[in-house]
Image 1: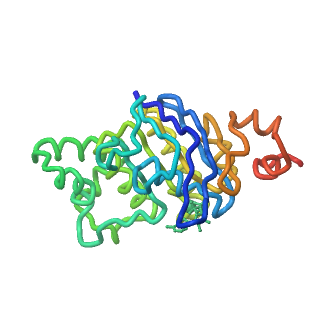
Image 2: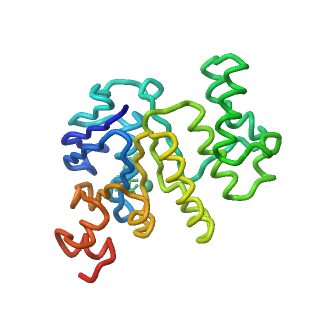
Length: 238
Ligand code: ADP
Ligand code: MG
């Protein structure tokens, strides 16, 4: 159970405000896709939800609790990045269990959680391999595995597929959605790929220059874009 609330959130870096009062309500178990051009503030917003970046003003709630001052590790959130930096000198098993070892989880639990995650992600055969011995898609799955083992209530994805080739991207989209349905976690997924947004989202949030232009289901945005920017972005004729 983890609805996420973003209420009039602003972010300044120095004197420059880059997020100008964003509000988004995300229901428990929803898959929300954030889209918008490069530099519009998508990553900054995710990082604020994760607690990796301070909020200048406004409020973020997870499961009804205001988390503005809650450190990242206590937010029950896992984040999957674009450059999923796996540790090259560690095997898949160690990569996936690293955060659990840091948290001093006992060995038997670590093994069970990693094996469960590996099964979900079709990585069982690869636990003894090093990242360099894996394909791009497998490495991306290991990155997701590292997130899953922590049983997060909220998953944040920041353009997780943008380093993969087109064919693999299509396959991974389906996998991420299946994973989401299976884990029933709330997911916020950033992409600048319209097709990804249209095919994956329950709701799409269209951002431009630090504001939200429109929020809606994919077909709502497609049929009733509020302006030419949204229309252009979603791909219907403006
Ligand atoms: P997106 O992920 O949509 O491409 P970002 O959230 O990375 O956009 O960036 C939004 C704006 O904030 C950009 O103008 C970017 O230059 C600025 N920005 C991001 N991080 C910092 C930072 N640490 N310091 C100063 N400006 C930043
Ligand atoms: Mg970004």
